[in-house]
Amino acid sequence: MLVIPDVLEESGVTRQALERLAAKWRVLLIYTLLAGPQRHGELCRRLPGITQQVLAETLHGMESDGLVVRQVLKDTAPQHAEYALTALGNTLREPLAAICAWAAVHAYPRAGVRPAPSRIAP
Image (cartoon, rainbow, N blue to C red; front, top):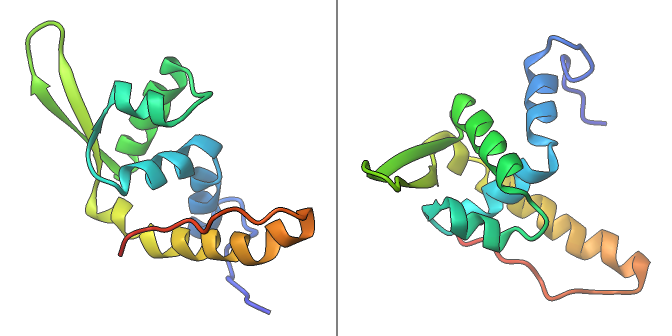
């Protein structure tokens, strides 16, 4: 059994990281931004069901955590900015690919449905 000493401790770094990443939209945003920098509107279109407010709050939190960087493209009104993963955010590529691979092999056959495999570029 894999044992990570602080995963169950409320103040442990592993638990804090898991709680931050466990938020539904964070993982989906990381996955979306693996394709490269995108503007707010593009992210809204690629993530059906997310509201503009939740997207803005989630991106802000991810920026505070050092996972996403916001670059202003046009400073005058209306302002344009795009979001991209930082080097730290990009380190989640392999763990996310492993979770997607696990889900494709283990989760869907039990439901009787097997979707096309998800690919995360290296």
